[in-house]
Amino acid sequence: MNRRMFAFCTIGPALLLLPACGGGNSGQTNPLPPPPAVTAACTINGANTSVTTLVGSLVAYNANPNPASGSTCDWNPGTPSPGAFDTAAGSSCAPSSPTYTATAGGVFSESVTVTNGSNSVTSNCPTLTVQDFNLSLLPSSGTIAPGGVFKYSVTASSIDQFTGQVNFAQSTVLPANVSAAWSPASQFCTVPAGGACSASYTVTVGSGAIPSDTGLAFASTFAQALLTRNASSTLHVRAAPTSFQTTFTNNMPWQSAGSIAAGRFNADGFIDLAVTDLLPNQVHILFGSGVSGFPSQSSLDLQAISVAAGDFSGDGRTDLAFTTLPQGTSSTQVSVWTGDGQGNFNSQWTYSFGNNSPCQQSGQFGALAVGDLNNDGNPDLIVGHAGFSVFLGTGSQMPNSLMLAISAATPASILRRQH
Amino acid sequence: MADFNNDGNLDIAVVDAVSNLLTVWIGDGKGNFTAKPPLTGFFAGPAANGDFDGDGNFDIAVKVAPTIARVYFGVGDGTFSALVSIDDSSMDPFGSGVSVLAAVDLNGDGHSDLVFSGPANPNLFQVSTVLDAYFSGNSRTFTPTGFGTAFDGGSYAIVLADVNGDGWPDVIVPSNFQLIEMLSN
Image (cartoon, rainbow over all chains, first blue to last red; front, side, top):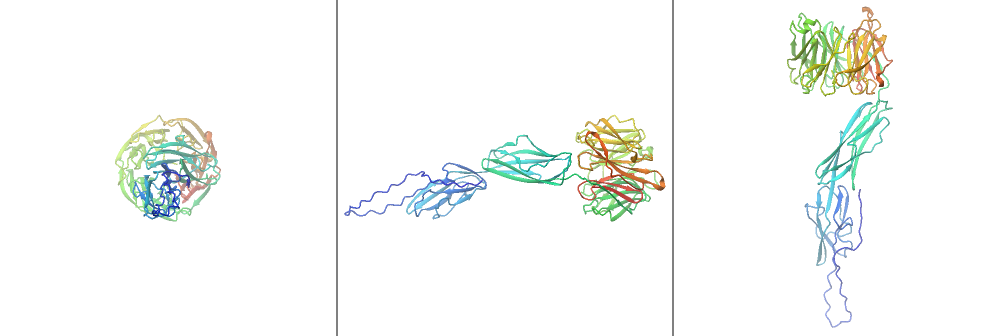
């Protein structure tokens, strides 16, 4: 809020009374003309006491409410230096001049020297304290689906050692089926000098239908005294799907599709697929194009039973893990082929279960699942056999050797992580 | 795999279709696992985990008979308190017993829906597969979606991914007859 106020009351220094000139004393020598009256009474926005204002506010300094004709002003910064103004001697003393847009800087002191002829008077201006908060609203945008929850973090931080209470508010009307709550429940919190005050704002979309995609623009506002700050973020509320369709894609390269995995194998951003095929023994890689099927394909020569995708090598590119039964052997294996991010895969690591392993005894294995079981950020492998085995990924070249094997009498399948 | 006991660590659910056991192994986040008492008393087939009733706890759906899927509702501590059965002949009308289950929130209501793919005809020369789904609702109910479709070839796997880039997961099923069947929205 800007405000401009002018005070025209008479303030401050004693007026110099002019002596009356006696017209009849012709015998006397005329004295020199008296020096003109000079007054100085610096105010800020009309106030003659300390003024607190906010960053961005327009501040009007006034050297003298009624400057004598011919007066000039010299504004001098105090602290911090340079202060609000620094002008050369001889500058105008027009009322409310100069004006100043308050910038962050703490407490300003300023003085003005008014000169008229040989007389000059200096007045110290009221101290000007400029206050400010920074407001942040994170994240700056988001997407939420029906049934979903989205949490904002709102923080007001003090500048200039400003202490005050802030009032967080969300200014957009929530659509039907969308609710939100502040935590703490009170939207008021106190910003300590030089510190910060935070609150979270959690938006929840009910499980009912959202009629159409809705964009929510969240403008977060707080105010203290004259201070208003806004931070905005856009939350996009997605409509629930209402129609479904099934589509066929013909002429896929396999004869006996077994296991399937999805991921982004090349750099085009579309979902790609890996499908195992035992007739012949190949793994088919299908490169997605978004909507028009899988026009580009390649294959790996591998007798794979199951396939799973994950970034086992920690290079940000999707790799593939397989359980395999190599031709001409009875030794079942688990292997990792690292992806190069361009759709190519190279065998990097293989673990062979021995002939007396649970895999062989069960006569069946192949279940394969991926997840971060030890919370180190690297995907781990779980292989189902008679019981299951866990291989902990290191995020470098390959998973660790067998970490855990739990045996059982009969074959197991592992529930994969799903949406 | 899912966090069945809500401790922030992934747990492993294992189906033993010979002994007919479904066991949840609780992970400690360091790679160690402790088994919960298994679910028993059924013919265990393919299974999937999801939050079907939207209560924040992971549930498990398991095929317990050719035409019956059973959903066990998680309590949030790795155990399950209630179940419902979905009996639908379209799941496996010829009783060949093979199908695949998956859990995915198709309609965006915050509940996992149950998707299955299974053979509709066991005749080797006329193999076909049905892909269908049930919407899960409040009160732990399951409603046929009505968009089931049959296609040629046998199918033994489902993968969920956003193939068409609309922000919602699609259901992708490969069939032996050189097809990919996709259910999308």
